[in-house]
Image (cartoon, rainbow, N blue to C red; front, side, top):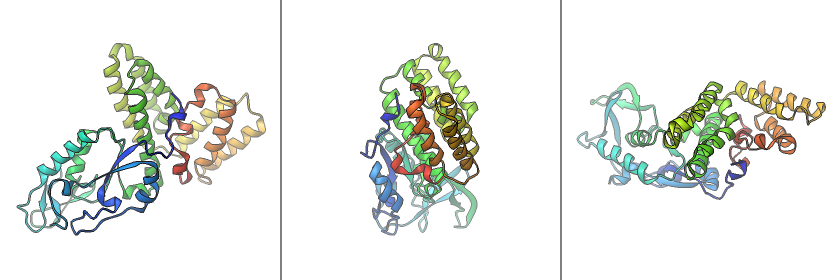
Length: 324
């Protein structure tokens, strides 16, 4: 199990996406919300699977808009002009059905603020039409996330934040590797290899969680393969959902530098250390020290460190570390 298995841009990985973001004219007003990022960048790397739940449950285009009505934790999806139009159960069931149907996707990109697709912060209204001050998830998105809570899910608007974008695709590629390398060959050994390969990514997100997941792996024989995989992957995806930061990335790179301290001369070590410090201070992006560190590790590092997913968690062409 090694970094070579990270796919290049050949669309091996499928991602579900709100159809309007792909330019499909499925909005309530007959329009779309085409995302240049999704269509000009992501479409090169991923097989995008468009879904419009409102059209999927039989609503026409154009159509009467719907909105969330009720209170936090207890709301319905009703027509704006005709509140007797209640599509709550249809949208929720459609989300459950799609989660089952799209069992091969490794992530999902949703349209923000949508009463069907919004991941969070969707306005909830009183029956009289006034905002309640509360917010919730779109009903389709709610069902999708409940049916597959480990699936990486993000809103298109939030992907314009470089840190959130890098975090989302780190999770997408990790999810893909689990599905293709561990789930297809379940064993104590494959879980252990996966954990070893993701050691430094886990440490960048939360060192305590890395240690706890190590204890889970150590209990593998006692738990059995099925329980081990369930427990481990739940903890793994939860850890990756936490954002890494400059301090944690710096700590990880200093750990990795330790693998070549005896095989790289002092001058080169100082160059790496300077870049790591410049990154810590926010003067250069993460890609700068990682690229130099990776160069020396691939030439002088052990087989173990060369397999670390941290060195190349996704294709370089995505440019995700260029802006963080």
